[in-house]
Every structure is written in C-alpha cells, then in structure tokens.
View 1 (cartoon, helix red, strand yellow):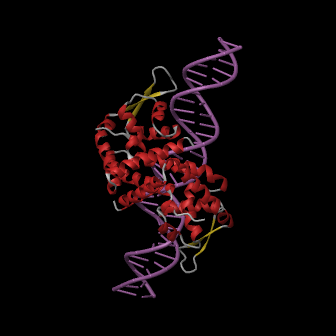
View 2: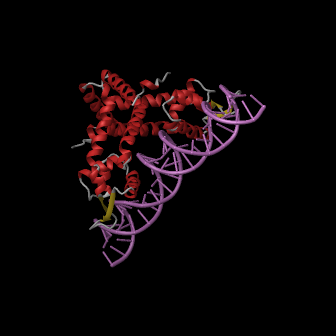
View 3: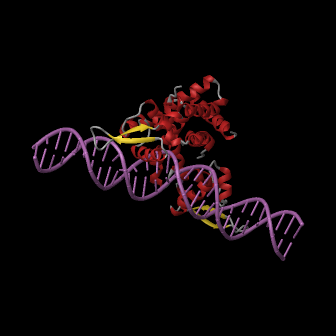
Length: 143
Length: 143
DNA sequence: TATCATTGCATAGCTTGCTATTCAAGTGAA
DNA sequence: TTCACTTGAATAGCAAGCTATGCAATGATA
C-alpha cells in the first residue's frame, strides 16, 4: 500500500492550518493578541458580559482550552472578570477598552490573511472551498 | 466591519485540522502511535537510516519540533538512533520492528479518516479540494 | 595549523489544543 | 432540610507546534 502525503486531505489540512496560524500570528502580534485568542475575541466583540460556558457554547473549543485562553487574555489585559450576579460558580467576562479598540484592525488582518491564502483561487473556487470545509467539518463532527 | 467565522477560511481550516487530528488520534492510538508521529513515520517507512536533518528536509515541520517528536518516538519504541559513520554531530534514525509492522494498518486508518472526512463530497469535489489546499499552501509558503 | 564561521541537534520557553479530574456551588427530591 | 446529583470552572498532565538560543563537531581559510 502507498500513502501520498501531498494527496492526503488530513496531512494537507494540518499543514495549511499551521500556515494560517503563523501568518495570522505575525500580523496580529503588533496588536497585542495571538491566534488562539481570536475565537474568544470574535465571540466577545459580538457580545461580552457572558460566562465561560456561554463562550464555549458559541465556539468550537473545549472548556479546558477556553479556561486557559481566558487566563492568558486576562494576563494580557484583554478581559476582566466579575462575579456573576446569580451564580457564584460563574463569572462574567468583559472586554477591556484595549480589546475593544483593536477590533477593526484585527478583522482587517484576519481578512488579509484569508485574502493572501486564497489569492490563487477564483471567486467560484473560494466559495467551493469554504463550502467543502463546512461539509467536511459536519461529516467529522457527527463521527 | 463584520467577520463571519463560519465563512473565514482560516477559522474553518483550524477547526477542520483539529477534527482530523482527533479522528486520527482515536484510530491510531491502538497501534501505539499518535498523530504528530505520522509525518516522521511516513518519511521513515519510505527510507530509514537517515539523519534528523534529512527528515526535516522531507517534511513540513521545524527542526525543533522534529527533535522533540523523535525523543517521544524513541521513548515509545518506534525508532532507534545510531552514530553517523562520518559526522559525530549527526545520528542515523532507524525504525524498530514494531514501527515497521504497523505500517499497513496505519495507512489504512489514515485513509479511513480521509474517507470519512470527504464522505460528503463527490469524486470531483474531493479532487478540487486537494488541489485548492495545495494552491493555498503554495500561496502562504512564499509569503 | 589555528581560528572562525557553519552546521546538526538539543534545549528553553511559550502557545494551543486535548482528556480526565477536582472542587465548590446550585438544584431537586425524599 | 438534608443528601445526592449536576454543573461551572480550574487544574493536572500531555502532545505538538513555534522561535530563539546554545553547544559541540565540521569545514574553510589565513
């Protein structure tokens, strides 16, 4: 049996995702954020004051990963946490001014990375590509 | 400005790659290997007795990452290392019998994961998808 | 041949991800 | 009301990435 890595979807997916992360890293580092914080920021830019549980529910990341990401975001001055008014186990997560201020620039950098990555694809191909990834994610999510 | 994560190539690429890694992880764990070892194994199944440098040259992984992966592979009984005959800085990396024995099963599991992932795509779509990823990787590699 | 640059690999230190576990706080039922 | 179950979050421990740095062996050159 043969196995051709340059034709393996899994191998390519891994390689591609690392290149995305690296490209995003170098572009957003000047803003004081890193790629792992991006999903949480996206959710919080839409609505903050939410609990960790709500954040996890809106994203595709495990609770333990989110807990650690939030610790680093607090350390980096991106969020503050306050006691939840009705549940002492939970906290409300709020964006700091710093985090709010960089939103548009961060969007811009992420869009730039996507544009660079997709620069060799036509409009129709880009749209197919996004569609395929959605279907693949769906197929793997319900095992 | 808006940013829709379910339409961001980078977001989807990250999510998809994690699902691939998880699916592969659970299928190959019974063989005594983990996803991060797969690239090195692919290269070594083709040819072993090579140096770390040669392995790095044939894969898309940094030298430091490879060094750590090789330590874990040695710990797990997948490789042995011998002194290089003509360069005392280098070592030759050899697969153990255990690593050689699991090759076909490992190929099979990886192919199964790819098949599951791509199950919602037609033959033409699968081939497009692989092609797109190749182009995207190319675009990001030469910055 | 002595020195200096290069090279092969290891190490340090960090992020991002996971599973499993713990623990305190909330909830429901006897 | 108490006791057991559930739930929100933190922690432990590991893998797999990365960049930067260190170090010893090679190689090239004055």
